[in-house]
Length: 111
Image (cartoon, rainbow, N blue to C red; front, side):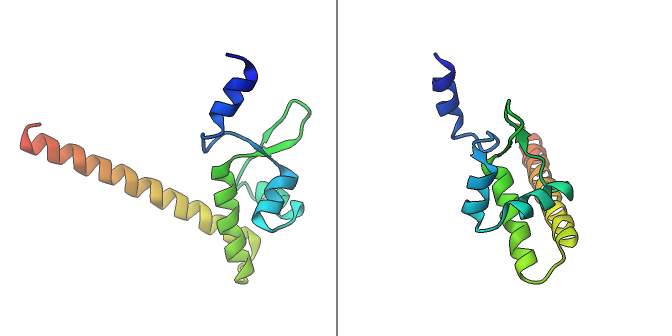
């Protein structure tokens, strides 16, 4: 398998940094400075290409899009980023709790 083959296979990976800053901004309908701002607020941390260019994953773009929704509604960018971080943490905690409940239910039934 060549490196190119491996890269194509990774395009289905939500965490694969497939998008340049310009493409990411176009996809979100925002500016590159907005992406830099959410990076500075530590909402997302883009990976860097070998040349030092920012690269974004689909997961990061979804997070940035949610922040943009809040900013478009009048929320200051720092507050929007904090809200998105808390929403993401809550979703993860709910996923973990659901998994614990499933595990506990299986133990009760004797599976």
